[in-house]
Image 1 (cartoon, protein in one colour):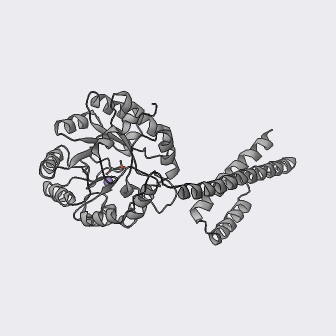
Image 2: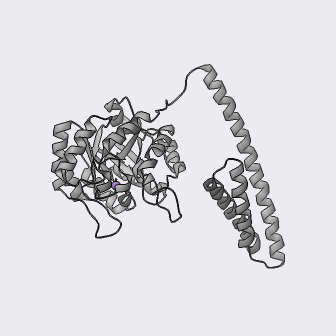
Image 3: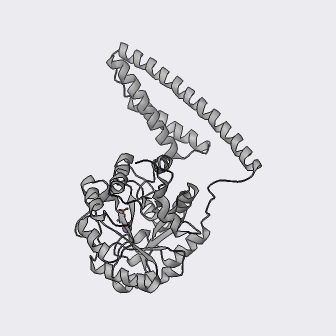
Length: 360
Ligand code: PEP
Ligand code: MN
């Protein structure tokens, strides 16, 4: 897929004065709840009303969505409020039903993006329509799986496409429900600058009090829109209760968010940015040289270990380094998470280098 300007036509046509805002409950629960939420959202910046009808739950026995009846409730919400509609589709039958009920935007969930079979089935069912399709990232941090899904939809002649970044699941403890791994989204943005990118802070955060901060980061990174789960009575929601906000809270969040311009103006702005960027480039260059020196020493250590047939991995020494670096890093204003990630990567590369020497 080349980078095509046409990918963002649908978004440009909406002529928005603020980032695209998709809001609505995680799940449609009752007709009353759907209509109440939609009416309350009508008075906010919301452009598109979302509700899950078929819910992909990780474990069986939980609420799995109201099914097709919910589409009727959504249709009524659209008639009464004028909001566009979006729901999650996971197979051809969902697509057929959603098409029959005039859904405007189809989103593909994280658990579906991991399966090329399902994506192909959805792509084939959508072929020949002019619907907008938003593809959530796969559950695991795999950029090519995400891109592959975008390509399958694109090849089915669907040109109104966007992606939704909802974070990635991780085995490690994290303050997020799904780790943002922003660099992955940035990589996708760099590859396809015209592919609209929407952030779903609700599923990244997992907690309502973190939604503002995650949304602000997304806007700072020039995302085109936000999808925020909104419920009139979040604590009693039938799914994802902890992360949903009321329409009132949503309004407060969107009013406080700062939308950044894509580029700055004026010579002074440009020259101060340029000076700072030059400094960064110099530091990056020094960092690379330092890392290269460090790896060369690792190789020397590998040679010493080889002479005595000693194993590469020395856990005690490694834990000492890590503990010290976290403490020192903190004093220097570096977060524990960053220091940990950086040194794990450095350590892994060191081990690879040493192992190569030992096996040579
Ligand atoms: C959702 O949007 O409610 C949902 C199930 O999302 P995800 O596919 O990101 O888990
Ligand atoms: Mn949800």
